[in-house]
Image 1 (cartoon, rainbow, N blue to C red):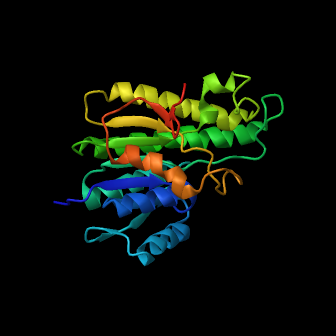
Image 2: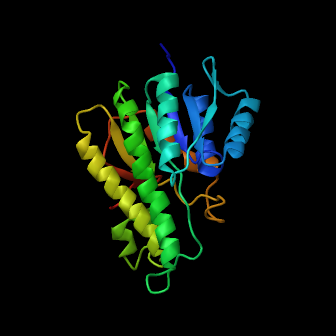
Length: 244
């Protein structure tokens, strides 16, 4: 029987995802890096291994996982079940931003479709596939990487710094992800599985191209919610609770 808790972090080959994987591994969690590009996933595993990061006697490992490929999601779930029999932590980190996204009157419909398909539908598909494994754990955690741009309250407040950031595809995808958090937290209430939306803050990554926080700083809050706590159905950011 494995003593280390098992975590799957999607999109963990770079940026915040890789840093979440690094911090979870340093905390003694056996981390599975999910990435659609196998070579990049292996490079991420080697990166962490070169730092001497392991969970007990287990090295960090990788699994191919493409949020837009249902077959890869099903195969990843089978692989985790065969190897570990359960999943203690699911961090839904993978997501995209499309630079053809824009305010509603101008946005490319194809860009909006791609973003919604990945950020929301893909995350829902991964969560559904992993739920039987999460139910097999004694106290599982689901962390959905959201954004303050997904807050309807902040999007509708002219005084908010997010008011002018109008990207109908990306913002709507994160609002939909928040709805997943709300409904799934209620569906799983009493099961021992917590579900929370975590906005890491304005982090400098390949996705944003700019920001005020490093990936290391941005990973701290998602890692905290992944490691424990009984709170569920919350939307939080580094400064506190985010309004829906």
